[in-house]
Image (cartoon, rainbow, N blue to C red; front, side):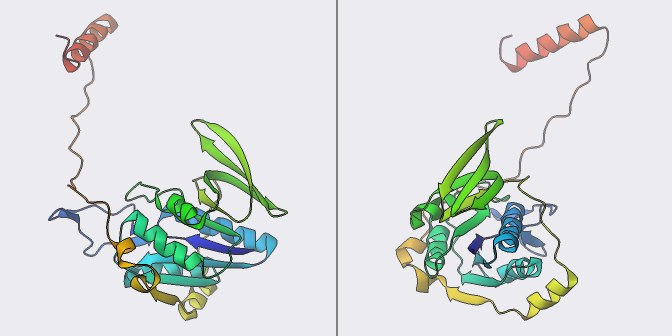
Length: 252
């Protein structure tokens, strides 16, 4: 199988977010592969081990995004591609990834359910539309056999089973697998593997690279009020709670 995994580099989930001049400060920040994308990488590696083939990872971003690709290579990916771009708009990123996907024939394209920093989850869906292929997500179990996939997906507290023919695009949800850690030999090999690079403006038009979304404001969540522990007998606590709720709801 020829597999393509779309990944993105995000701030480490344990990083303290600092906002300066209306933007998240990246000074001295640690970056990692988007956690949901790790599930996509792991699933691609497992499929390759079971079915044979090649796993290619691709990302769109600045030079620092190369470290995410190196980590994916250390996990076991065969090839890596970086699209050099400063674009952040979901439409632009999807168009860039589609341009790479069209350079070869891929049986299955995988990505994370959503990015932990934006929470949007728009790029994979837009990419499937760009490539005119079916999309299934968020996938928690995946089987590939005889040119078809059988996927289980979360559906509002239940599990939905969906099947479709390849080629297709799936987005990985937590629980699909347990991503492996890069081995020391894998890390050493990854340092020597070449990474193919393309400039974004060479792949798509300037019109497609233009941002269509605008960030109006960015701010940290307001601190929450401290919790209250109600005192006294149970009847007194119930009466006090009812009084608090009436005030909060503007009923008294």
